[in-house]
Image (cartoon, rainbow, N blue to C red; front, side, top):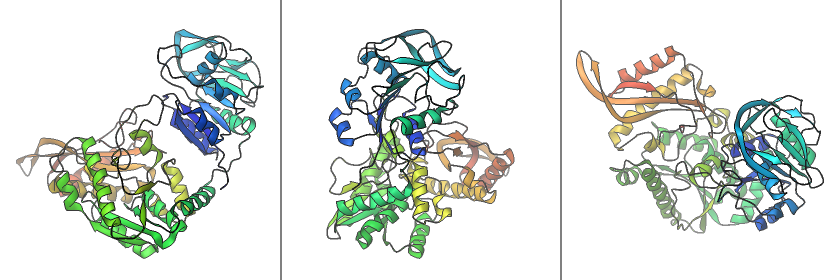
Length: 513
């Protein structure tokens, strides 16, 4: 198989690390993120075109601060250090890093003093984004200063002989006006990358890889009906054909009539071997009286595997389970990043049992949602399907806050259907990344027909995003919110109050649990 050229990102805990990866992929170059502890032997094996050292929250002189082997700088591979990464370079080459008198945060003007390949074509005095409390006070040996700001005398450095570069500012954030030019200079002028990270190439390489891995064996695909699992099913079927058995599990946690719609759609449009299992009683019984969201997710993850392994026992030669797991799921569930913390366990990542009889294949484990959608387009899936909003694997279990009962699920299904229906009616569904209703474990006093009520509070959530890693709340017209609220309260028995969530991610997550 042809070697996939890549940029390797070593993460030291920066909040922007995922953004670096996204920016590189936007330029059609593949990038991978690994923790700062990634072994030098693995780095050599992966043959990267270039290495990026990310920012991080610590200071290089702090006790226990993450470090790297100096061998990284001796591989003959171009290196770019950003913020903390720059300071690591300085510390390895006899520079000095000290705490700044004034922490620099926000937009500043970049004054270019020496030209190099990294800053080639970048306008002098352009805006860049700073976020640091340390400064280089002695230039590392063999390097030159290429730019400064008013408060940062060493803002950009380079050693063209060793192909090592460093930036104190963050080129990956939108606030750095010419950040993409700087990133592209590193990719194409310094690392000599080719822009070949495309949906077509991904499909071809994945099909070949899966053919080799699975051979003539069979595989089960967890087909939820969402974009990720559906695109995964179509992709894997190109590799192994009828040896792919797609299983849709009705967990009892789906939206209104969703399981029926999913099965009809696949039977009508695709030549896939699809089996539907109603396991709602099993899931709901295991979730009875469970309130903690982490426990909910782990129960659902374990139960999914139980169901699939039981079904796999009905077939011969099934060894693999296909899942549509995405990069953000992995990032939020496990500490794949240097100093980053687990945000929540996704049922299909951290919720899986430690011992499984089936081997996992996750073709999109390194992809973001918009990249999966592009692959879906390339595979010929209909636009109306590809544009569907994300739906969490645990389903309504993480949208019914508190105890899960059939009654509370039914209330949420009815309210959610009204909300989504009105989004389509007003032609704003496609402007929103994700929209849904959340049933709160809160009741409030109301008045209906001159009588006092004491019923449930329902929250509406709608956000804009590109990858789910960051998100902003959608600004509805007040008239739209009024219409949805009135319709829900009039038609959904058990709800007497509707609220709208106006928090962004971060600090909030998109889902409430």
